[in-house]
Image 1 (cartoon, rainbow, N blue to C red):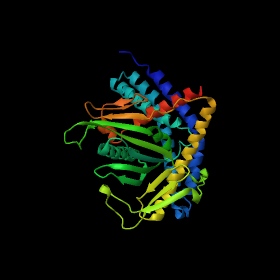
Image 2 (image 1 turned 45 degrees about the horizontal axis):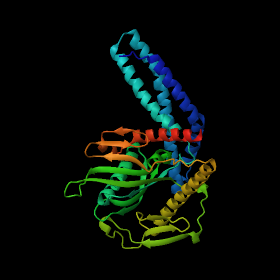
Image 3 (image 1 turned 180 degrees about the vertical axis):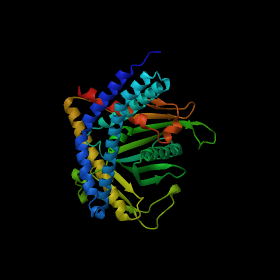
Image 4 (image 1 turned 90 degrees about the vertical axis):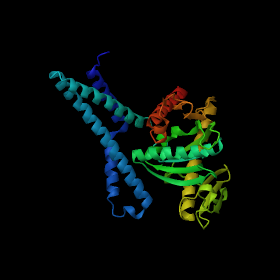
Length: 372
């Protein structure tokens, strides 16, 4: 077994963290925190609830990020002292503790490094995620429900606030579709690598003959619109329909026509909202999501034009991006990054950070390759 060079490993950790600190621009981060603290202390802060939530959310996130960096820096600076004490006293337990600390720090620094890779135009935005059942009947609807739970559990693990905006239930079980917001900075940049078709292979719990079933669900991730984006939608370009909210099995859960469906006529984009109590709230939420989708559509069209001018006809994303296999073996595998794990239940419980990290690194590699 090779002897580890702890001095070299510590130096490498320190250098990597220094690069991260430069990218994060800690001085500017501290200035932004001070500015947000002043806004948060304003007596009229909560006169505008939405703006207040944005201020407090961003402040909390930046404070946590700064604390994370400074704590990592302190732990790395403490390592040489720990190493020297272990060597001087020939203490095997102390040296083992140094080894564990280095391994733990390497993982923490790697996780933080992912944050520096989120430098896209909308990466720092909050996210709007829509899950739709695909081919596979009731199994696909159940799979969509499993994916919704997976993402909500992931957000809960990180302390991110979520809001389910719309749920359309399937007749027998599961969901036809669901839309929710993840209200955390960089939620879009992080979750955007989840966009695409997800596939589930299992023994169907809905098949009385116990046959294996393959089903599909589509995941869409868009950045949340902001007031500075200026997406103007003329009233003549939209059609608004109202209807009664429905629950599982198609049952009505509201005696008034509070649910709203907005159709953007030029593009055919349709957004439905039914989870708020009033028609006004559902309409506002639907318009917000519609604007976000049109913003992303405009960006995609601009990118497509650039690729056409450059003569690049290569698809940037494969459609089917991840398989969840429960039978005849247990495995979840990302088809782009080749990352896989043998514990699907942990994944469905929200442990998807390794897949997100691999996806972000893969995307960066693809973007670098296409620009060279």
